[in-house]
Image (cartoon, rainbow, N blue to C red):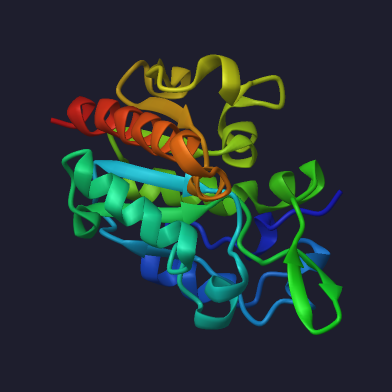
Length: 207
């Protein structure tokens, strides 16, 4: 199983980590992707949001959460009482995994091997940013930080102590904003309100 560990510089700041990630060959996803998509936001944020992987728009622009799901997330974050400029946003997997359908690139969920390979980057980001709360957006992010047995559907919206920091940091899991986008009608409104409520728990915990 591959690992990004050899490409992660020791004691680097976020800018240096972002630059080093351009050369990462820890798994095979780098090759078909346009570029690595590392992170954005405040490198000293109290609240850190971790998604799954870049989407098609993010892969082309090189910035996380700038596509449709990112726009929904920004609106939800603001309704939860935070400014996106105060956040640090990243993904558990740094390259876009996709399948081709004609000329279209269709999102494909990362395998556990991709999550494991990319985990050294995420661990380095968390150490450097040192957030008070980390929000896992979706199952892939939750598996990266809370283990493969964690189920977002059963434990979403609950603040959990990060055992590695003696309770100084907390982790909360919720659905990925793309899941909210896929719902329709009244179900969409319910799903969106639930995402905002989960984010509000995290925002309040940072104060």
